[in-house]
Length: 240
Image (cartoon, rainbow, N blue to C red; front, top):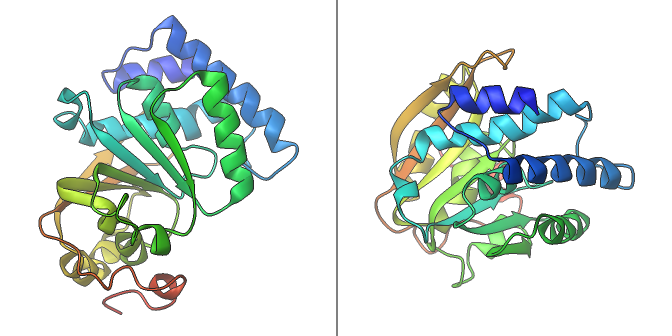
């Protein structure tokens, strides 16, 4: 796991032997299940270490103050094979994590993975974000909401900010060069109760390109009509 260890060190993170064993198990299970269902197009061990595991851990650059709390609640929207939520759970075992995905087969993999990694306080929810966000047990309940490679930012804001508690934050993982996308999302961010805090650039030797974390704070409640019904946030993003 040399590539993961060295990249984590650049982020100021140290992984112990148990965590490295968990990441190795994660890779093995991901590859085994990937033969039966489409979980990832990235299968080379070194590339998975960098493009899935290390990329997930870059979220810690926006989490430092939040992680002083042991009971922090995190939701990963559109988690797929568990990225970035599961790597963060391996790094911070005390967090309370909800993994949300619309595909039942992927949820089955995540349930299996949860058992193999012996992870506590991990809930797996199957459903569309547009519908789950209107359920009281999930609406405005999370300190941190994460999402990677799910949709354009104007759409993503509508799918995620309703899950954020007041005082919480949404963190989007994006490639560099999305300033136009950020500008397009300004109306959605304001309408849904958010405020753009910062854009954090990530430039690690392990990555071939630069990454960015878009950090949006939740400052007032999301109006009850949002998110709109399934498919509408993508077809007709707020602000367009």
